Every structure is written in C-alpha cells, then in structure tokens.
Length: 398
Image 1 (tube, rainbow, N blue to C red):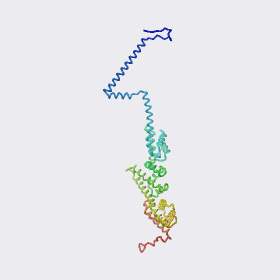
Image 2 (cartoon, rainbow, N blue to C red):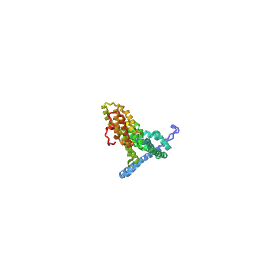
Image 3 (cartoon, rainbow, N blue to C red):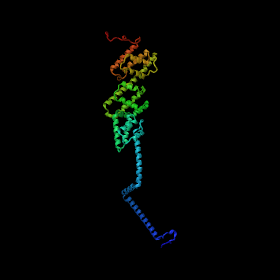
C-alpha cells in the first residue's frame, strides 16, 4: 500500500514509500540482535577461558589492561613527563639538602643557586671563579664542587668534564685546606659557637698549627694573639679533637711526617696548658703567705697574668737578671718581699713546668742563674736574706 500527495501538497513534497521504510527498520533490528548474540557468545567464551585456562585468561586481561588509545597514551605521556620533572627537582633538592645536612655555613639553596648559574659551555676557570665568589673557604668550595659533579648528568658531556677538571684542580691546589678543613668542619662549627668566633677562622688556625712543626713559644704566640686563657683551653680541645678526626680519616695509611707533626704539636700544646696549670695551683699559696705577712698585692694579680710574664721571660733571646727583676716589679710592685716571693716562684717553675717550654737544657740552666742573680740584687740590703758566706764551703780550699 502506498500513499501519495499531489504536486500542490504541503511544501510540494514527494511521495513516501512506506514499505521501503519498514524494510529498513526490520533490517536494523536484525543487525542489533545479531550483534547482541555475538557479544553474548564472546562473553561466554571469555568466561569459559577463565574457568578452563586461568593463565590464558590472565594474559588476555593483562593485554586488555595495557591497551590504550592514542589519545590516552598522549595524556599519560604528558603526565609522566610532568611527574618526572617534579621527581627530578625533588631529587636534586633532596641531594643538596643531604650535602648540607647539619652544616651551618652552607645551605641546599646555596648549592642549587650555583648549579642554576652554570652554563653548559662553562670552562674549568669559570666554574672555579663561580664557586669562589660564593664561598671563600676551601672546604666549602670542595663541597659545592662535589655537589655539582654529582648532579650534572652525563648527557652534558662538556660541562661534566669541566666540572671534574675543576674539582681535581681545586684539590691539588688546596689539598691540606680541603682534606683537613672537611675533617674538622663540624667540630669547628661547634667550637666557633662556644668561642663566639668564625668557624673558617678556627679551621684556618687549625691548618696553620698542623701544617708544620712549631715550638711552644710559637704556639703560645698564636694563641695569645687571639684568645684569653679561658678560651685557650677550649681552642686546645678543638685542636685535639680535630687531630683525632684527621688521623681517623687517614687510618693506618697516615703519612709518617704528618703523624710526627701532630704528635709534636699535641705535646707542645699540653706543655703550654700545663704551664698555666702550674701557676694556677701555686700562686694562691704565695699570695696567701704574702698577705699573712702584711704585704699588699695588686688586685689584678691573676695566675694567667703571672704565667704570661713567666713565658715572656723564659722566651727572651737575651735574658738578664735586670730584665727579670723589671718583669716581676711590673707584676707585684716594689715591695721587696713580694718581688722575692715571685722570683722564687719563677725559679721553682723552671723545674715544675715541661722541659718542652725551653729551647734547650742549657737555656733552662742559664735562666736559673739569671733568676738567682736577680734575687741577690733585690735583697742586697736585706739582712734576713741568706748570703753566700752563710753556707759552709764544700772544701777548705774553695
């Protein structure tokens, strides 16, 4: 059956074949049914595989899970790239923080700032200039160079080579300052806080002390020019702790000359400190005795001041009795009993302190003679002072 309209119908439309439309709809329904049946069959086969061959089913499932459309792969690639960049930044931050952990003189941001300032075409000299402009201390420069070498990828071949050369050159030029400075890095920071001074300054002094042999006089001058007696004990403790760390880092392979220097410096430091200890123990006894006899002493007469005067007198290249007398008068004034008591204390100190304080045994004996002469001069008019004639002669002809 068909329906048709005249040419003058609505809009002038053509006739519609109803039978043809119905046939097309029936065909679409049939295809949908077939597709549904096929999907059902596929599901049945897959379910059957899951039951009969679990391993095959697992492999199939994994392949399906791995399958991605081109668009999804592009999205995942972008996300992975962003994640990789974030992870790399975090890794660099973690590494710089690890290099500067517990280090009060350098921060992770300092290291990252240097790395970001590097150009791919930077030369060995450019790298060293950049690092030195940031840190003046060789030990800190060495840490920065280590970090730069570690964090520069091998893909940047030219820059990596320049960094390695800069690191090797820096170590060759500053070996003692780098090795020794890094060994005592944290100890110097700890003691610098206690002494209210700079850690680089302490490391510089440590390297100066341990670089070569020094006499007790030289060590004393180094310490006296920088620190009070109270601080000297702390500095000496730092030196000993630093030497211990230095020797531990070398292990059994420590060079014999270096070991000899450190042992010598350790003994000389101990000699200086025990010299102060002698006067700290003996001076109160002398002052108590003098005060009991009615002698007035200066209020600023302290054991460290007395020790400094003693060290000055024994290290004089041309000692005389008159120099010793003047030195003692500057300490206690013009009272004869006070001068005599202090000269006697100095005479006892010649044997009560370490032999290492004296240039030689002969010099030590010479100082004893000078002090005895000074005592005789001071007491020339003292009737109670023993004279040479008061003692029996060992031989009749002497």
